[in-house]
Length: 149
Image (cartoon, rainbow, N blue to C red; front, side, top):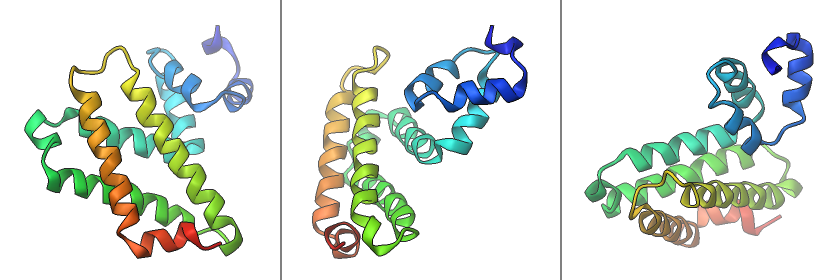
């Protein structure tokens, strides 16, 4: 039914949906190109984080558990957040940083609760989350964007 809508109306419908709903719709072959375009336009942060998480999951067990790899991915996630936050006015940085971290947490939680998650990945995700926290706590250049409004 959605594929029969004119593009302008379909864009209005997609504009009213949240990321999770759009991500689910993107699994439908007939809607994938349109929904994927909409996701990339309106949920760039979510798409980038989801892509990084998929690449994390595609690694072998030993690679995922490698401290250097986890540390590098944690830094990449935080630097992506910092890049976005730096483009905001000083008084909005703390709120934006918190919102982006919350979104990261929700996307990780969504993956952990996914029925197609490989066995053992929840522990690897837990280690990644702890590494993100450790990196945040021990990197003053990152913390300053969040701690000082």
